[in-house]
Structures are given as structure tokens and as C-alpha cells.
Image (cartoon, rainbow, N blue to C red; front, side, top):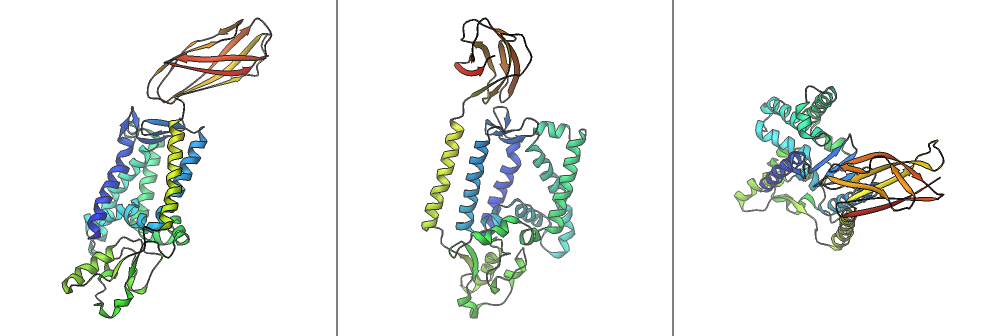
Length: 366
């Protein structure tokens, strides 16, 4: 039965999506975008908003992956992985599918929607802080209540109608499908032996009749296949609706190859990132001749606290300001320093050293 497989995947997805912000690697959430510092915590590493090339590479991989999955597997996301489908299925299993249980299902969706709301906030605010300030910090409280209300209204009242009328991904699928995409199709060649029990129609979450042909509203959840199987097994027949399509085909390999190449390129870019970034800019400030002021930023991309020494390899140069710098893990240090030179020069060479690394930078000198 397909439903058993869907249940397993739904539970795994619920555990992963709910648990990612609460899984800590190197002292930070496994996956969380920190709004205050504009950085993405990603499985023990960090990506800063300034590293836009990584964001572009990740977006390219994501689009290629979505395209690959849709063209080959059709609406597998809608029926098997979409969080809305998972939540609605879960609430139906708790409340029951009978019409008289609909009010109970709406009640069940209240705590589920609250859980979704606090989980979504934890993807942007450290979980401990989110729980601690849930009802004491006005901004957190407002976001929690608004998200709770929106998620509940969408699930309880719009429900599956969102998939068939609003969801942009569902509309995009119609463009990406080809004649070999995996879909659920009724076997019209055996129509004469169909029992007309309409069990497939009764269990369909979006209310379509699979016997009337392919429908863009179908979410490929396979409920109709399971319902038909319970009836046809008694007569020793195969279910009339079933998955149809060809997964292994030339398009699978070349699309998979392009997507795999994008994934490898993204991984290489992540691995090639330096553990520390050092940026230096000369300030346009009115200072006496031979004296310049520089602003610097040090980004620590690692999980260890760094102790670095700021210095210059140029002769006749004196640094006025703090030389020893402490940079916390996954954080940025901003500072300024005055530089005095006893002779004329056009370039200044600054460097930071420590923890087995030396990084040199150049800046203009007036």
C-alpha cells in the first residue's frame, strides 16, 4: 500500500523540518538564517550575505533540482513531501476522515499550526531565544501569533484548494511535464471491468475522478490506487489507477548530470572558502600629513575563537590602536586603526597573523 510508504516519508520529513533548527553543530543551529547578522548557519559552517556568489550557486542548484524532480517524478512533491500535505494528512489521521469529524480536525490543526509557527520562527531566531522571548518580546510575539493565524486559516479553510488554485509550483508543473513524466493514470483499456464503486473518488483529497482522465489538480498521493486495490484484490485484479511513466530515460541522465555538476560546483565553492576574510578600506578623514585612518573587517568563518595580530611589513610605519584582536566563532569584527608613516608612500601593506595563518592586504596611502 502506497499510504504506508507516504506515512514513513511524512514522519521523516516532519522530524527533519521540525528538528533542523534544534540540531546544533559547532554551537549553532544546523540550518538557520540569522536576521540580525544576515548570515546563514549551514551544518556547522556559515554563509554571509556578502557572499552573494554562493547564494546564486545554491539558487541555481535548487532550481535545477526542482526541475529534474518535476520532469521525471511529476507531482511527487505535492503528494509526498509538501509540508501542507503532511500536516493535513496528519490532522485527518488524528481526527478521522468522516464528515462528522471535520470540526475535530479543525481543532487538531490549532496546536499543529502553533508548532509550525514556532518552528518557522526558529529558522530565523535562535530556538532558545525564541522560546524565552515568545511572549515577552513584542516582535517575536507578533510574528508568532500572525504566523499561527495564517497557517491555521490556510490549513483549516483553504486546505487542498491551495494546491489547485494558488500554489505557483503546481502551475509550473504543467509547463515542465512531458509525455513520460510519472503520473497517476486510470487504465481506460480495462474500463469495462471497473466495478464503479467510486472508492477512488471518495478518498481523493482534491476531489477529482481519476476515471475521467488526467487532471492538473491531481497531487499524485496514490490514495486512489490504495482504495481501488482494496476492492480489486478480492477479485484477483490489479487496481485500475496506477503510476505511469518512465523514470530511467535519456532526460534522466542529462538532467541529472547537469544537476549533479551544479551540486559539485556548490560544494567546491563552499570548501574553497577561506577560514578568515580580511577587508581593509582607507577612510576619507582630515588628518595631518603622514597620518591615515583605515577601517577593517575580519570575518571568522570557523567554529573556533581567533586571536589575531594586526601589523604592517612596511618600514617606517607605525600602527596606532589595538593590535591584538579577538574574533568570536562565526562572527565579524569591525574596527579602525591609525597609521603613521615617516616617509612618502603610495601603498600600505597590512596583515593579520595568528592561529597558523597570515593574510596580507594592500590599501592606498596619502
